[in-house]
Amino acid sequence: MSQMVADTLVAVLEQIGVKQIFGLIGDSLNPLGDAVRRSRIEWIGVRHEEGAALAASGQAKLTGRLAVCAGTTGPGSTHLVAGLYEAARDHAPVLALSGDMATRLRGIDYLQTTEPDLLFRDVSIYTETVSTPAQAPSVIHQAISAAYARRGVAHLTLPIDVIGAKAVGHVPSVGTLRPRPEFAASAADIAAVVQKIDASGTIVIMCGNGCHGAADELRALSDRLKAPLIHSFKGKDIMPFDDPHWMGGIGMIGTKADYNATMRCDLLLMLGTDYPFSEFLPQKGAIVQIDERAGVLGRRAPTALGVVGSVRPTVKLLLDAVAAKSDSKFFERVTSERRKWDDMLDKQADPNRSPDRIHPQAVARAVSDAAKRDAIFVIDTGLNTLWSGNWIRQSGSQRILASFNNCAVGTALGQANGIQALDRSRQVVALTGDGGFNMLMGEFLTAAHHKLPVKVVVYNNSSLGLIVLEAEGVGLPAYRKAIEFPNPDFATLARACGGHGFTAKQPGELRGAIAEALAVGGPAIVDCVVAADEIPNLPHFDVEQAGHYAIAKIREAVIAATGR
Image (cartoon, rainbow, N blue to C red; front, side):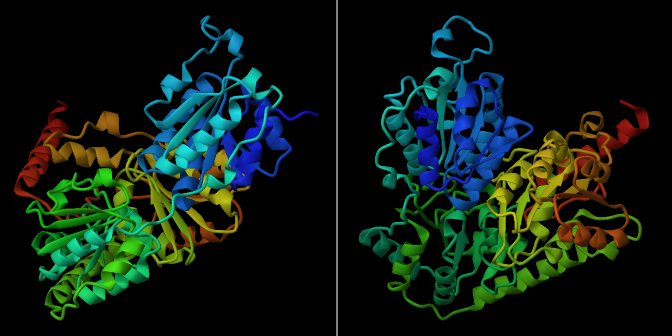
């Protein structure tokens, strides 16, 4: 049998290490499916194409390597788009494949007609239609190369008559299709950073996603400069929660100690982070930012110096050049304030805090305490992000992923499925609110079907909790009719799908339900019925915001009394 264009595509994906393709098969993808059937790549059929895009995004975010998803003609491809924003916004290399009708049917308003290259333009850094077999090898190479070079989504439209046609040649230069290597900042920039550091008395080092793999270098720099290490949410898992250098996060997933330190220090050294919330960053211009991406330098807060370079090799050069500091009073004060904050978190996470209801902080802490030392936590978006982000105590060997920049609700389970497919023996835990889980709960069927032992922990408060907080934060009463909703019995749902289901409604049931779920073979859901009126900690709470909450609560009381 002669090789098809689809075989050319699948062959290069095998060569560069792709293990799975996530998608929903359809008529225009049949040649691709046949090529996958004869390869070593695993086809994972999802229940919704958005789940396929999320699975690929999760894989790519975790590994930094290309992951692949596919959807068929028209609606099958349009369903991919929402999930692909996970990869686009978190800068992860994903190849999205759209099946399409035969080329002779284009331009005549045929069934399921779309313009995929136009549709995918915003979410993709590269999008192209494979128009002829002769063109295919070069376009396939260009798409994968772009995904790696610019760290984002590359998209190919695959008309059925083209990918089913006889192949013409092979994809060239396969050895060039790999992640970008690290690189150090220039000597001149290193000298400029050293000058800023040596001239500053108190320094805070903020660590983001670009600091992964640089834990030893960061500890050494912290010791040398007597500088506390703080992190963005993306950087939380770089070190164990109890590492004495690691003071916690900033912002809503953070501590008051870190906010105060950041605002009081002489110099904030931002490493591998494009932290977006400017209100938690100093505005006095005392910032040095180091990042691989030149376009992110200086855009979040007034910055004295921006340097292009990877964190690990650049910090190594700084360690050879900066003068050691001897005054540790600032570091010790931040440590003391951090311990007080941690004591508060521990009290809030105590399951015995209330006799008859479960507080969401206790759920996150129970999962954290019971999880394996190398577990991967995938956190959904919403109020549950704050519970998981603040109360999980990471081991340093665990990983934490979320919808970091896209902040999309309903993304955790799909991403967890993709991550679990990489290694079915590693513990993967999706933590999600009930609203987010309801959006793509069908992807639990994907887990059961493909024997992906993902554990799903649901914060069940029968509402969109973050929307309540956001409304009250601007002085508006929460619109309960739009925010609150009934839920199914999630444990029964799990069993109906072929998984395992557990429920915790009382504090005494919580740890046992979570421990059982994490120990069981196969996918499982833990339905944790939590208090709906819990308010998260606010490390920085201004007077105007306090007034908004007060006004909102008064309005809610009036509505409750009058119905208007």
